[in-house]
Amino acid sequence: MEVALSIAAVERATESEAMHGCDEDLAVVPIPALLVVLINKEKEKGAPLTRREVESLRSRVRCMALPRSLARALQSRRGYADVDLDRCWEDWSARRACLGRSPAASSRLK
Image (cartoon, helix red, strand yellow):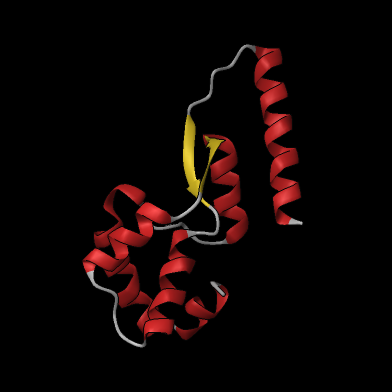
């Protein structure tokens, strides 16, 4: 259902841009969120991920190119920001430290 809503939203955004002559920048969005992929992989491993593992997962994650406004709406709907793809190790390290202290935060990301 999420994918169908996203595709419909992309189509509406594209139609709107075409009608109004807007050329909105695109954002690369991992689907599923890279944060979720990293959390699940670390649980599976049973130990903290290494920088090499995080960067490897980042390079293999499936992504979609979405208009930035739609990417922001997706983030808002999820309720959390994803890991920054350009700074995945640094961002993951900071997030991981916070997730370890907040069980409610990590349970929302499943």
